[in-house]
Image (cartoon, rainbow, N blue to C red; front, side):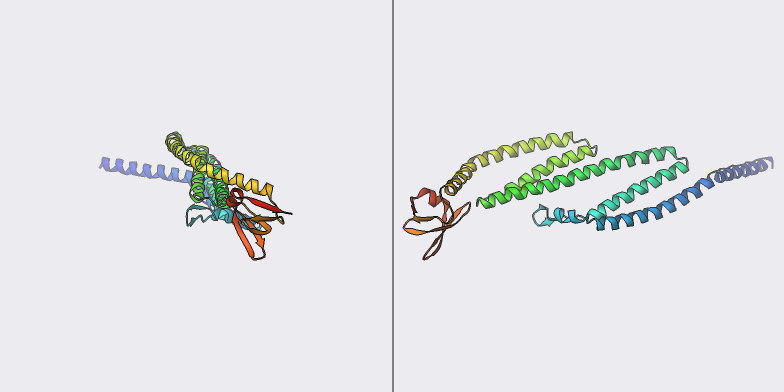
Length: 275
């Protein structure tokens, strides 16, 4: 009977102790709930206002530039600047709310870990900015190389421009990962070997093909320096007036019509300039 009384007293004491602990943290729980609710409402309002402000500032103009980029042929990006910025801000505010809630509940360890996460977010965002700028730069270089090959009527422009695009994007991706605090030593060493082999093969291929490119450039330069639009010339018994000179041909206007003569033929044949 005495043991029953002891167990009863022990149970009552445990309940009292538990209740006292609950009453101690109850205000903290209520305060945490209030802070989270107010913070949630404020976050919604801030994100809504920010979204409208970004739309008024036409921040989505960047989308057009990025969404025309083809990482792989036929596969374009689906980039939404406003959504990315507002999502980032929203989660920043949510993390700050968790820190405040942890402090109210005296959960110091959790608060410190979340604070570390909050400090990492700007670093992650800057890495994303580096990657985005690199993507635009790589696409500009890609388009420039392709336009150059097209203007010179050279084959292989599409493959070479795509290869250079991936080369630039790879280096900038590694830079972005470093900015994000990710160790890229293993990635860098492996990619360096692959790129070295690729560049050697490309240099050999381009070296053999460069003779034709340089030759075509010199021929175009010679024709443009020697002849001019409006000048009358005779080519292979055809007399006419030079109407246009481009990188690969000369347009000759005659009484019989227009002739488009390759620059190669102009350089390699005798031309008589008429007074």
